[in-house]
Length: 286
Image 1 (cartoon, rainbow, N blue to C red):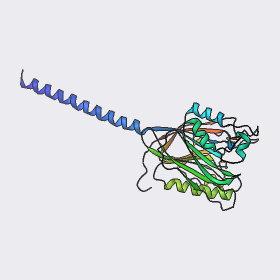
Image 2 (image 1 turned 90 degrees about the vertical axis):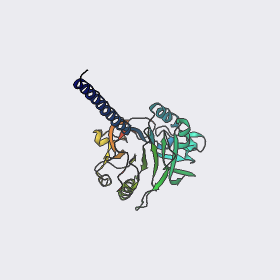
Image 3 (image 1 turned 90 degrees about the horizontal axis):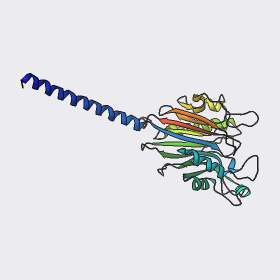
Image 4 (image 1 turned 45 degrees about the horizontal axis):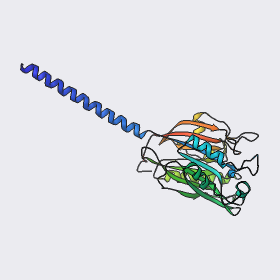
């Protein structure tokens, strides 16, 4: 066997090893991208304090729970939630904490945030998380310059399958005064920007696109319905209004899907949104 042949053979072996190394590096990088690309499905629904609006005294929690169990979203944001009010006795025969009851029925981790005292108990918003790290649950009081009903926003951290963590917020803004809605929008988006993790917010905002409050939303926060080109009403009523939203920070998320679900258990429809986390960490300057 001559030297040239041996040299050629060694060179080929080296080339094969180099190609294998390049392929392994490529597959490793690809696996990181797949891990980072994490989808999150969420529902936002104003539940009309767990009572059928067309059939007073008729409870709706069992029907809502059955639907949520069937759909299995990662997180659920609920508005118009009662906790231990006398009003709940009319539908359930006893004072009920609606979020605790739904958490038991669905197997999700529940958190209720009080916005105001009401009818011997409390009234506010709630979050149900399928996979909770137990962190970040808190309630933010929102401004009320026009002295309307007190409003708040509930927050929690959500742990994703790739172990990334994000914040989700849920709110129900003032239904009477535009002055309040403007102040509340400014407050909640400023707070969301200050959080150390990527975030999105959802709920019953009680305004329509084009209102002064809507115009205050920072431009990099996207309206999921608008981005999807879906302007279906979420508050059907007689004239039909789109007042329930999910807004996401487009620096960190992109929209996968958006749907209005015409559930018959409230005077609102639910929205179902799937997002993808495209950037796991906030820049150090944020």
